[in-house]
Image (cartoon, rainbow, N blue to C red; front, side):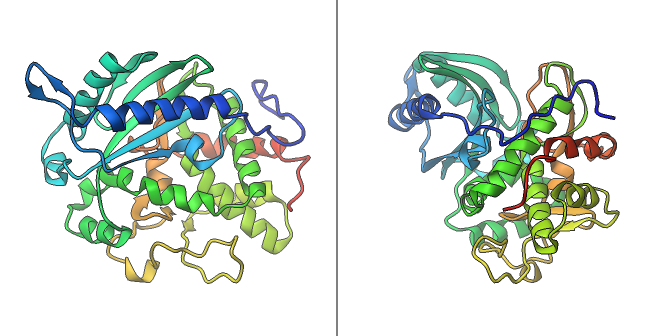
Length: 330
């Protein structure tokens, strides 16, 4: 029986019209890139260099659900010291405080929500829309190979701090996913949002990124077996020795051949099973980092680290069939 809170719709989850949202994102990025590096307060330099700003999260991945515009904005800088991040109990907070000060005084429409150790959360009230922004900062690595080499010198218990570094490669990975897969991701996220309403709080809420990776894998399994997508996803989640990774040999471009690393070459970084390995970061087990409890009205972030409490997901996952009964694999 369906949960009374779930109201699945038939057909595709609409692709949002993002013209206004993209303008809002452009305004935020332009404000930071043009003015923040030289920002001075009382003759003290607050700003730091900006190498690049990446649009990540649902908007960056092309999997937003209408009306739920969450944006992860990652600021890369060569001035952010990885060793300082490891040593400090505040991790990325010192750099985030500086950007917070700047945006509060320079970005019209900025409405502060929360400053966390890994992200600055705010709403941006643009004339055309309101978007929820998680702004993160990251050290800059020239290549993913440099990043993986860097991780090998970081203590294991500190590696998950740097999942943000791989955001730009996550975006690349998502660009290669076909529209049909992104439609399934949007529908699965609609199920997640209905099953774990933000206003109510709860335990074991899967992050957007975990949902995304599980859907991609289940979609490809179902397509190869000509089976039911929902049943493949349910079976995947219930596997005791879950092992989702991206190093298989594939014959088609749309399949999941990994362009960032081969698991056999990154054994030192790979987490133990059960695991959903980040296609952009072999040290990130999204099966753990992508599950967390949250308080009523609290935002859940993809980079905050998880608690690994999967029981609520296991209890609710079968209701996802209601959201896919009208869809056919294409």
